[in-house]
Length: 495
Ligand code: GLN
Image (cartoon, protein in one colour):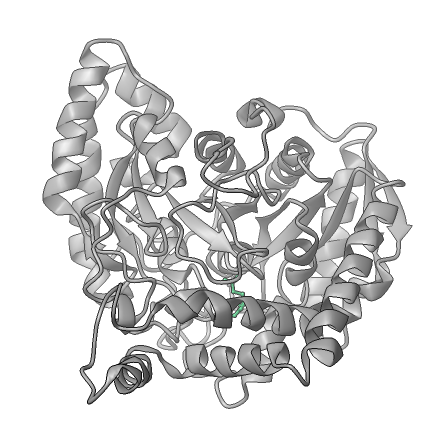
């Protein structure tokens, strides 16, 4: 078995037992990046020298017997997290030359625990997208291939597509992502990974380039539930620098993997049976419920009646907040500048040159729904529906401990598909946005393959600050599913 195939939990043990060094583990991943990144384009920036330095330092810490939770574990960092002294682009040309003078709280927490940063992962521009096709640094390839049509280039999902592709192809042991409407869970589903969007406020947003502040959730990607729980444990925690950070203790998420589901009540929201969903996704959902029943859970029908307004609500609130957050990119303070004949001209030219099409679309929608004549009709109404969506979840969680649904209405699609009409692309988020609007925690766990041999994920949604139940249910599905399939493109198999 090669070092790039290990889980984080296995690598942690191997490092402590001195079976291999942190330097060897990091070099194995850097070699895999060298071999496969030219094709996958999962990383925008690779920090070769810095990662090797960090690994050597980790080996000293290990030799002294002072290992912390993640000492020597090589990770990919979504390029939305500001990293001190390392270029941070947010997938946009406008931040192309931006080198932050500070470290985001989440990445600082990972560094505190000894993690090694291999590089910055590609992503949709400002995290707007579901296919990683909107990045100014080019699309990312999904390492999975269709059985029948193995030449088709599939998308890894988005917006955290680089993080997902890197972890699936064994270029990194885990990664950070952010989820504003599904950007951790949908790429996790498309790439056969576990992704967790924790409760709003669990992981600090400080130093994460803002998309829609009331919806943005940092969280982890990994190949197992245990590994995601380990990463979440490091990333989470109260941060006085983020006014919406929750001052609650961080439990032992890893321990929750072993809890089982005996006695839990699992809700099935009937509104998640959407028209046009492939029957194999429906069948996998049933299979997931059977697995949980076999593990001792009780399955209960519940209703989330406002689900059908979720997408419309999200695509008003997210662009509204984005248009306001992105006003700061004016060519004066951050990143690139296109000179103009006066200040206003400089602003306009910089933003026209620096922002891609999807970002401009969102800024226009957002400005429109916030404008004096339309604020009440769109933005205010969306906020009211958002409150009703939260109430749906509160009511459901009066009856059940967690919900099980599919993560996405399809498996990974090909690059270029769903591109003609932005609305078709937005439909990817139908099952994921309600938990962003309500802030409740949710995961995606690989549960099976479709007829093309592509991974499909199931989503577990939990009560606020009860990630432990989400993790316990996800771990049960992982055990029952026994998902061992591997992507065609991966370290050591880059044929
Ligand atoms: N696909 C959604 C969007 O384009 C969600 C993105 C995200 O979660 N960052 O807005």
